[in-house]
Structures are given as C-alpha cells and as structure tokens.
Image 1 (cartoon, one colour):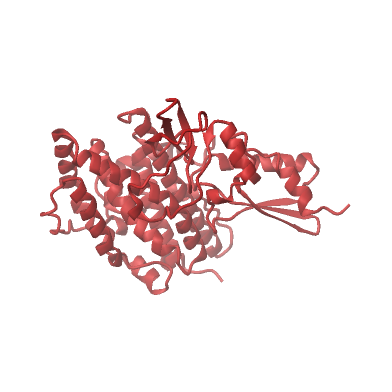
Image 2 (tube, chains in turn cyan, brown):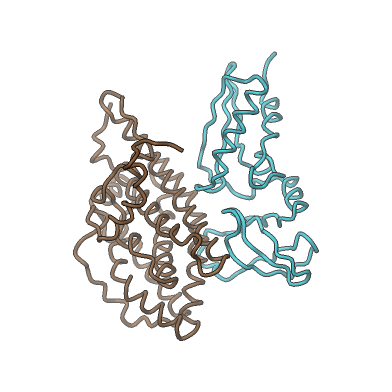
Length: 163
Length: 265
C-alpha cells in the first residue's frame, strides 16, 4: 500500500494542543507540511511562540500517533520561518475555539508596528456576543492569550490574540 | 571544513543574543509568584517565557555551529551546556539586563528600554544573510512587539500616575539610564557580523530608539531635559566584563547543573 500525504494528515488531525484541547495541530496551523520520500515520513511543524511549553508535548504526541498507526520511519522537523501567525488558524478551528469559551483571533493586523500603541480591537464576548468588552491584561494564562472582560455580561474571558 | 568558532560571527552574535534574552528572562522570572497583582505577575512571567524561548533558539543554533566546527566531530554541545556551563566572563549579555529587579518601576523601565532595543534590532536582523538568525528574529519580533506595548503602557501609567509612582519611575531612570549607552556601542563581533551582513551595527538603531523613548516619556510626564548626557561607565557586558550582579544570577541559575553535572529531570 502506498502511503499518501492525506493519510498522514488524517492521523495527525488527532493531535490536539494540550493547552487548548479543542484545537488540533492542523486547526492551529502548527502542522506546516508532510513529505513522504519512499517509506520515510517527514512531519514539518512550526512553534506558535518561541517559548511555548506545549511544543515538546505536541512532538511527543505526534510520535505517539504515528507509531500507533504503524509508522516507525519518520522524522519531525521544526521550522521557524515563515513565522507562525493566527491567520493560519482554520475557520473551523476559530468556531471550535469560540464554543470552548475563548474569543478567536481577529484577522492579523500590522502588529509589528510600535506606532499602534493605543489602538485596541473590539473583541467579541464568546458568551453573550457583545462587542462591549475591555482588555484586562495583554498576557493571559498562556503566551497566546490575553485576558478580557465583557462589560455587558461581566464574564471574564480569554482572547486568543492575533499574532 | 571546520571553522574557527571563536571568530565565527554567527556564533558570537547568536551567543550574545541568547545571553541577553536568557539573563533578562531569568530576572523577570524572579517576579513569578511575587508580582504586584495576579494579571501582571502572569504578564511578566509570560515575557520571561518568551525571552527564555528566544534564548533557547539562539543557544541551539550556537551549539549546532560548535558541534559542526569540532575537528573530530565528537563535540556534543547542547543549549544547556551554553546556558549552564559557562562562567560570567564568557557571557556576552549587556549590563542593562543583569541589573537587579528593584521595585516594579525599575523592572518596567528596564523592560521598556530593552524591548524597544530588541524591537529595532530584530526588525533588522530578520533580513540577516544568516538564515537561522533571520528566522529566529522574524519570530521573536512578533513577541517583542507585545513586550514593547505592555512596557510602554506601564511607563506611561507610572510616570503619569500618582506622586509616588512618578517618583519611583524617576528613581528607576536615574538607576538605569547609564546602562542604555552600551546597547548602541558595537562590540567587535557585532561590527564584523555587520560587515558580513549577518548582523547590524547597533549604533544605527540609536536615533530611532531615542526618539521613541522621548515620545513615551513625554506622554508619561517624565522630564527629558537630562537625557542627552550619556556617559560611559567604562566597561561592557557584551565583551564579558560584568557588574557584580551577574555572578549572583549564575550562582542561582546554574547551581543544579554545577552540583550534579548533566543531570536531567
């Protein structure tokens, strides 16, 4: 049987982000490519943040699903460029994130511009859908999230910040 | 063919960038569990995490270059070797990042000065001819952008806050300003790396950096009249000459690896 890239991608769709367990590495855009040369599989991934502690566990989980499915001849490569962006998150992923109670990232803006100091995005509350929300802190429970609170329903929530 | 690693510019530049990030990351991590409020404890710890992540990437690259340059191909240097098994004079971090945390105002101002510098530096280094340095810089730049935003907002909040917060940020400025000059004085390896288009001459970043500092300070109502007078303190961390603080940082950070070499957990 010839292995196809789709077979491997399907297997890897079971690998979830340990910190946001509703999202797979495909939803997040962490999986960049799969190459198959003869019988050897190469899985190419990119980290969300340079210090993201979930990356080690994600690699372990990739190994584990590949081996469970009988693929022993593989290699996991990490690339840094082009740098990961929340624009790579799938629409399906954004919906899953929202129903999990985390506001999904807005489309990427020119965040690498320090002139944008005080311009804030209107982030929709994932619970009551109001846009009347405020930022509590730029940094949340993980590197990829910021803390917000809804001014209408008063619930605090995480925002998966644009990156 | 093995290269002479001690003069190989991508190696020295990577170590310098890694040391800067590691030492400030370590300093910031000293706040974890001690932040003034929970949200800001999380923020400074997140910044520490980003910085240690950047340091790891630069150390991994430096270790790879060392292993490739080994004559018999038997070196087994890792990121941990470089972080835990070098002494103060081997570290190439600038003096600013090793200064003590002091109060929240001093920590904030140190972060603001350094993040702004890193922002303009990585902005240039993402075009480095060395593809690994370029890729790490491109990635780190996005993180640093958040650090700049966060720290400048805090500088404004403290400067334009209460009498006490204003006094404290002025005291922090008095403590830290003298260490900013070094950021823009190139070490030999920075100049050589710049000549090879691997690095950049940091003196070229100074005017942009200074302009932004003035802009934020004006909003923070921090007087800027006395800022022009940069004076050298006579030695530079970039060249391995450090203040007394680095030794204490290393003593704590490296203790386990020194006591139990190569232990893992």
